[in-house]
View 1 (cartoon, chains in turn red, yellow):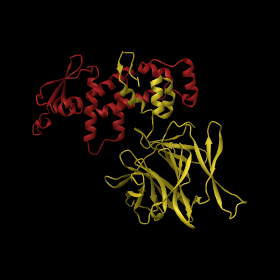
View 2: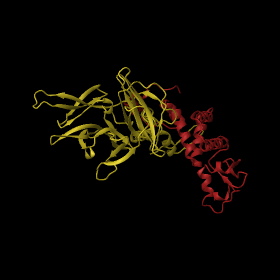
View 3: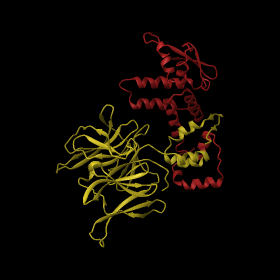
View 4: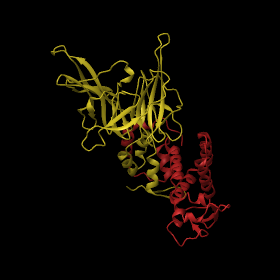
Length: 172
Length: 301
């Protein structure tokens, strides 16, 4: 249980996480516990020792450093008094998403979903919504890999009904 | 609903993630993405928006502010289709005694025209008193019904009341105010239709009947006094937000006859700490006559 990590110890306990491709990551305990999936591995599991390696079957090591960075920064933001200025949080979030392709973003969403962390999942799904909101129907199909199951006539009819929603789009 | 999909890297995306992304999209995007595939179309058709936004009416424009926006709170021109119900006052000279009556009309965006729905009974009338800023011209939309503050005549007595228009069945009804309290404003608090009582003291009482099974009015919320700069400053709660905070509008008045002005400012009241704080809005808020809350939906115009 979390109580075993007494606050009297000066050194922060570390937990080892194992990504899907076998790579190990040493993570400070409070940061690791931000992930519900890791937390539930220990909580209610009397046999689990803190030195056990937690396997994360659905998370590739490619995204682990970025994800851990997010948890570290955002837990620090939450603890800080007075709270950090909105610009600082915004700047971190923008830098976090910079240079991430659509595929990388979706993979991180899947990882956040598996790790069961609301804050990261909300942030990433909001980012995905922002990326697609001004895009064309064709772009969005490619983004999610969705096949068009309408006949050309059906699609033309729905398009005509919602004509107002088709102007002012970004380029694909 | 079959929503799962695979993208270029052959990543299998489960339905709950796709829905999590779709529900964050504004109505315009979701309307466009009805064309993506059948499952997205059925999601968009069923989706309801709960997010309260504010519409500001000025002479030539309709602007909107989303106070629950994730990043920046800003004012934008409204660009979605809408439906308008209006109450037109008229006097029928052939009728004795001569009384002003109201004709309820609905605007259709498709035909760009007004259509008369019905003429309201003479007992119903709208009273816009002085000073006008304490009275709302506009109806408030809650759970697909529109509400206006009215006066109702019953047994030769004038009663404070609320006029209701059910937008689905297009029917009118009248709800009398609790203990005939003077209604300052109608608003949406925690998703319920509420009336804000005209403050007798510096505190403001908010009533609702929606949480009471017998549909009786009950006192629902109470706001403490705010810090006034002058005796004429007025605070009007508008609606409640996600974390139970309350959005309010302050009208600062200078009635000095050499220099008369009125300033409007939005405040956020937090019930936890019982304090008011200012909200910063980017973009230029045009000088508006009135503000109403609205929730986007896909009801066809």
